[in-house]
Length: 504
Image 1: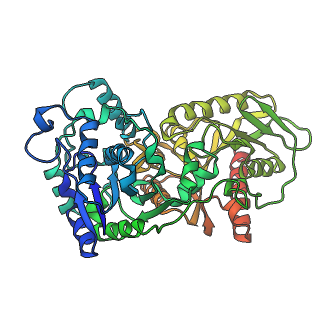
Image 2 (image 1 turned 90 degrees about the vertical axis):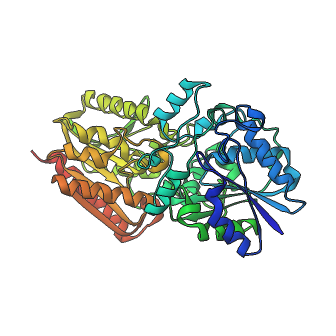
Image 3 (image 1 turned 45 degrees about the horizontal axis):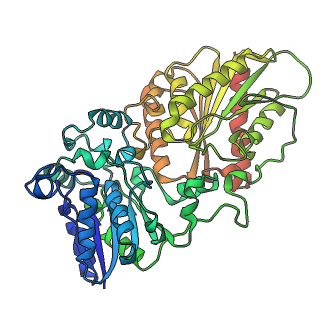
């Protein structure tokens, strides 16, 4: 019989697994929710013998649970922070563990503390400054979003989470995880909660970008499931979670395709329009695609790629077919098409990526061949949050902002709550600035929600938004959907942007 050893995340004790454990035992499996020292029982932030609790304390708790399984097949489940003691214990008992399940959890690395996975950057910095200070108090009822998406939680479940939450021993977040490498031999399954802003399709896209850190996810021993809920599925979808865990133990789940498979990754497939090459000049991280023929200074469209994109990705985004395709189309329309590489390599990089975009715009406007008073910006996908600065304070020379299948509010797992990179908030200050939004009908639900949030805010403030709908289009439709509907959407988008550049 399989026994599931269930390890909770920050602030939660073994109680959090009650309903999921019932679902597992009803199916004939065993369930051992682990009582983590300092989080279960009356001892507060101390462990056995009154010693301070750190990550090694919790690893020992999980090792003890594995040993208590009495020879049964063990599947370790780590939620959130819980994946750190799970990996530490599996590294010490690899021969006893049949599978590790990452439940809406990151990918911890040897030598890195759990603090690195805390989504809220300002909170991470404050906790790091505390050093060996007091335990971390649990959030208030309205503060759980700083630790993960509360999507799907009923009011009663949120009340229960708040009432039963315990202070997290600070040492569990600050002590680095130490691994020998033995755990690498254990098969794994990721259970992704899409309400947190992550999906299997997103992971496949990141793998396609060539991120070396993600190539291990294409191992056939690695599988994935999705749950349409937020960060606490054991409270919001316990029955569905139990079913996913049972199927994971059976080796089921989706697999990711490795790079170098039979066909190129989606972002490197051909552009949907046959556009001839035109003169291109490269200066630093910026490329200018120049319109044919002579003439005075021309307007320019700066195409801003999405991400995060690994720093090692080759070719870099300014050479991707979608970006060069749009830029060449713009040049054929008589304006300068601009592509660039910015440093959005992780969700923590929006600040420096924004600086890169601003520097590129300054470079373009300073070029004698460009009409500095007629500039448009077009943001793609995860580059969408970079549009917020321009919406919040649009300069006079900015004639249009376009956004193509964009992320228009920070996703819950990004830790950017309250940051300035929130177009859905910034649109209230856009005034009469023309906005062109390309919306695809087959969008990832987590991204589609941000688009609707933006459109609701835009309607409330009377923003000047034109929506170009692609009902059957996917995220990245320019290389995925070579249909007349998609081609017409690209033409209409460019025609609108160029018309705004020509107006006035």
